[in-house]
Length: 162
Image (cartoon, rainbow, N blue to C red; front, side, top):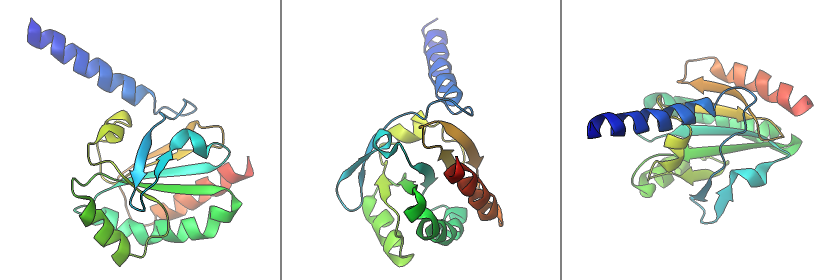
């Protein structure tokens, strides 16, 4: 009986997290430390279009996607676009090393305890969430394939126009 209750609680919590990522639902708020040191709170990004990209150094598709994300960040940040790269590695030094190697310009946040990853129901690497200026989830992308950055760019432009 105890296992049944624990299983039910787990799936209820997971279901609640997944439900929060439905289009037009408020994006779950969080605070994470950046590689540079200060904390970033999602709620404080309101008024900007925000892309949250969950990645890890051991994820091959993540490494392929990063230069494209860097380009999008550089191109649209002055227009009100913020990109938050949430790294899930247990060792922040690995994230720092890859971020330096790829010359990432966007903030890299550290989720080594995986709290935010669970909050966002992370099941695939990389995963990307686009949030509108009002803090609502608009698009969720699981995984990466060549050309997806064109979809990201179209969606970013659309949200910036709103």
